[in-house]
Length: 98
Image (cartoon, rainbow, N blue to C red; front, side, top):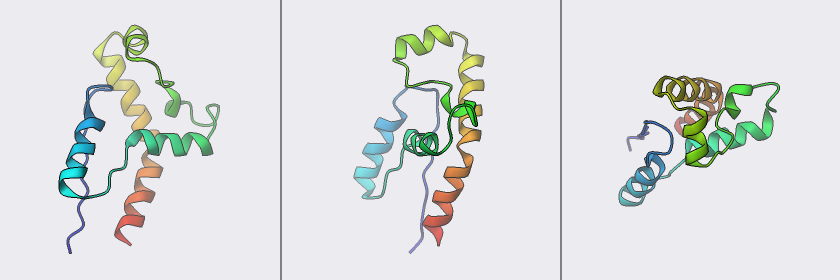
């Protein structure tokens, strides 16, 4: 059996999780949210150790886009947060394939 991983990317709060959940349901495969990975890492790594994990602070959409009104700010914050979460993603992939 071929193991597959689907990664869905895009700007924050644009429906990626909604799409991924529906895809998971239709394909009958596991769904793991990047928000979950970041949440797990936040439980292990406080903000003073890894501040990039905390850039969005679970803001409501209106507050988020008031805080980060420029697309460059959103992209940069998301990129840094994803890079900070890379260790968790790699661990999940390694577990999945072993």
